[in-house]
Image: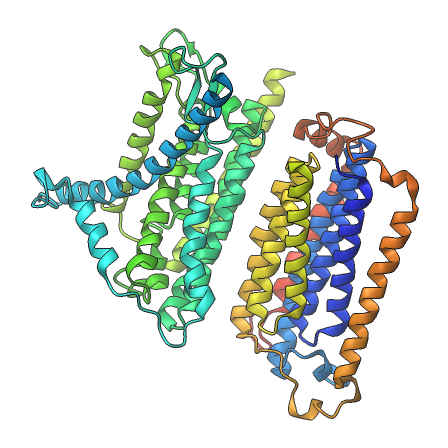
Length: 100
Length: 343
Length: 178
C-alpha cells in the first residue's frame, strides 16, 4: 500500500513544475500547457484524498475541474490565435504595450 | 502445475488474439480486392496461389523490400512515431473487447476464464478513449511529412474524426442506458435469450436508429469510404501517407483494418448480441462472434465500393447537423422509454 | 512490491515528461510530451481505484484538449522560442534570471514536501480507511453527481456552451461578415 503523502508529493512536484513553466517560458502556448499541468496536479491530489477518505466526492470534483480546464483551454487558445494574427509573435513580451 | 497452467493459457490466448488481428488485416486486404473485383464483374487477384489466396503474402513481401524513405524536411522523431501511434492504438483498442463466454477449455482448467484480453468494468469508455487517441497518428503523419498534401489530409482527417466521435459516443450512451453497465461483457450478457422463442434479444431490435448511427460514425472514425476523404486517391494523392514508404507505410493500412475489426467487434458486442446464438453451446460462442464480425466487415467493404465519396464540407455538415442531433434525439427517446417502462 | 514499483515508474514518467514539457523549445514536442504525462497520470488514477476518472482523463485531456492544442500549434506554425531582436537587451532575459527562477521552483517543491512529511496522519496507506470497491463504481458516481451536485453539473454545461461560443467569436478573422 502506498502512503497518501507519496501521492501528495507527486502532486506538489507537478504543481511546482507547472508554476515554473508559467513564469519562466516565453511562449504563449507553453504557458497554457503549464497551466494544464497545474490543473492535473490538483486533480491527482483530489483523487488521492478521495480514495483515502473512502469518498467518491474526490472523483466528482475532478470531473468538474476537467470540464473547466477544457473550457479554459478553448478560450485561451482562441485568444492566442487572435493575438498571433495581430502581432505575428507568440512571445508574451510582444504584447506589453496596451495599444492594440 | 495448475498454478502455471492458467497464466500459460492466458498467455496463449493473448498471443492468438494478437496474431489473429495481424492475420485479419492481411485477410482483409485480400477480401477487399476480391470482393471489389467480384462487384466489378472481374476476378480480382487470381495468380498468386489458388484463386489468389496468397496475394497478401506477396503484398507484404513487396512492402518489406521497398526502400525506407524519409523526406529531408520531415521531423525525424515524429515521422516514425506517427505510424507507431496508429498501430498501437489500433491494437490496444481491441484489448478490452470480449469475444467469447467463459470457458474452461473443455475441462482443462479448474476455473473458467473469460475469453478476451482484458476485462475491465469501463470497457466501453476505454474503447472510445483509445480510438480518440488514434487521431494523433494521422495528424502527426500529416504534420511530420512536411508536405502540403499530407498536412491537408492530416488536418481534415483529424477534424472528421473528432466530429464523428460525438455521434459515436452518444449512440454508445443509449446502449449503456439499456444495459445498465459500462462493461462490454455485461452488455453482451444482457442480450441473452429470446422473445417469443425465436427473436433474439439483441439491442439492434430495440435501437435500430442507434445501430445505424453507430455504424455510420464507426465508418467515419476509421476513415473508410464513403468518408475516406483524408486518403482519397483521386483528390489528395494519398493524403497523410503520401510521403511514407515500406514498413512505415504498411503500418497505416494495417492500423486501419484493425480499427475496422475493432469497430465491427464492438458493434457486434453492443448491438448484435456478441457470442450468443442458437445451436451452439456457450463455450463455442466465439464462432457466432466471428460470423457476426465477418458480416459487418463484409458490409464495410461493400459500402466502400458501392457508394461515392463525400466531399469534405458535405461530410462535416452531415456529421454536425444530421448525425449528432439524430443521436442526441435517440438518446433522449431511449432515456424517456427506459424511465417510463421501468418505473 | 510490484505496486510500489509501478507507482514509482508512473510518477517518474509523469514528472519527467512534465519537466521536458517546460524545457522543450519546440511547442509540438511539448504537446506530445504532455500527452505522455497525462497517460502516466491516468495510470495513477487506475491505481487509486478511480477507473472512470482515468478514462475521462484520456478522453477529455489527452483526446480532446491536446488535439485542440495540436491544431493551434499547426495552424499558427508556432515558431520555436527564440528571443526577438528587440527583446535581447531586455533585462529579464539575462540567463541567471532563469536559473534563479528554477532555483525558486525547487525551493517551492522542497517546502511543500517538507510540510507534507511533517503531517503525520498522512502517513497512512491510501487504502487504509475504506476499500476501493465502493468508490470505483460508476453507477454510484453518477447517482451522486446527478442528485447532490445537480446545480454544479448544469452550471458546467452552461459554462461549456459559453466557452464554445466565445472561442468561435474570438478566433474569427476581423472584418469578416460571418
